[in-house]
Image (cartoon, rainbow, N blue to C red; front, side, top):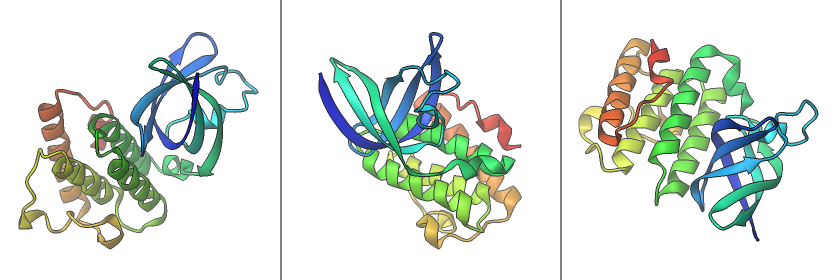
Length: 196
């Protein structure tokens, strides 16, 4: 059994048995991995916080063959404020789903971009849809699915330099780019319909 320490953001979870969860972690060095977290569904579980979407922790993973188990975790920074407002939560969930699918050999870039955009959702005055559009568009460009043009200059910038687009326009563009991503990747984003 080999031990590996890494930072990670929980981009998805799934129940496994009575008390366990399988968590999908986006890590800068391993990409997206699935790890078992034992006993975290119990009421007094010590690692319950680390098994929830938007958790940003340092994870100690035990690897046996191709499977990971979380041995312990410590919170790096709280990103749960994303869940306090419905529009932020929906956009944040879309970003988690896109990260889960789009992270590959460039997982460090996706990790940093996701972390930056989640913090922007919490602390920035830029509209959540504009931040989501920025994230999804940049992921598509990085993956080679979209060629950047001057038309997208409003949102093809680092999120720290971004200004809010008109909310309806940002929403339409975000839906269009998510639809493109679904077609190119052959996936369906469950949270995309919530962007009404």
